[in-house]
Image (cartoon, rainbow, N blue to C red; front, side, top):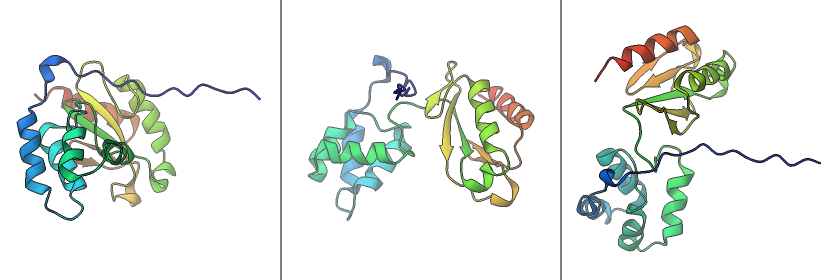
Length: 172
């Protein structure tokens, strides 16, 4: 039996100029720490504020919520919604649910990866697009579906994908 090596997507490194404001993180944690089950609201608020959950937030969250760092990291890594690195200017989500798979989302995903030059959970080399899988966008009758930022698109072909991405490239 031959064992194949698993290849994980490469994640871009955070540069020093992307330093995180620890006071901002602390204030966000303080806003939500009294809630029952505060970790998810804290993580959502941090990601909403700065676009991702930086590694420097993990010990702060753990200390303030009286949890281990492993518990906090486990939640961040379990939910694909949470990013651990800054995202691109635009978020491209491709539906991976069964209804969309039945009408071509696998081919759409392969095209998107090739067109953007990155895998799921990664950002294109120009920093414009982060590609993410999503498991249902609620448009099951008219797949395959995708969302770019907050714009939902149905019946997306490779050609339509190219047009949508090109239109976003022109938006600043």
